[in-house]
Length: 254
Picture 1 (cartoon, rainbow, N blue to C red):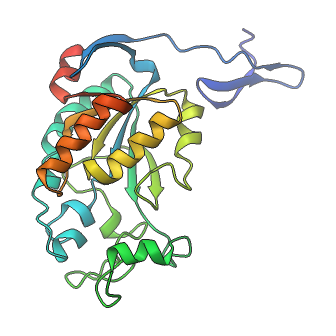
Picture 2 (cartoon, helix red, strand yellow; picture 1 turned 30 degrees about the vertical axis):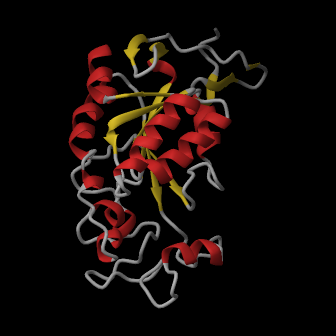
């Protein structure tokens, strides 16, 4: 390859160009193959094509002063992924596996949120719903760049992490998530976060429908729903949408 050529784009979906040449071969990244045990099969996968997607580990869902706690939900289960994620994040980062934070962060004007969706979170119309200030600290519920939408303090982000705001339970709906993953050449998606049976499952399902290989990290995922909801989620992922393992298996395989 001509070393004088300049890169356009992000690898592996990048061209090399100058005034006369456009090299569109998109040179492949060296594979980093690992063997990973899951509930149903032993996988061989390429870490060079993998990414960790952490869904909604944010204050409104996981903090005792957040929105779920305000409406009477016990958020203790939603905090369970914090410890396992603290263990696995440094290891994945050392392996150059990107970390993508997929947080619910609405527009302040809620112009893309339908009445039906707002009804789910404020069925009487006089409660604290999307965009309304929390009585404890005034943070607007699930609004982009607010305390409510920020990742919990216990999980450390880094400058080269990737951030995507979502506005529905699925992170693929009306967001750039699919474009980002394809541009980065990521085909294996590790999933973590909350709630397992809602936003994690909806995003994982859509990823499967779009052709991605999906792996749910069981101990890095939780829900404030009843236990049977988590069991059904794990069953459905194993049965229809991908694979289930835990962070200990992943760490051991690396």
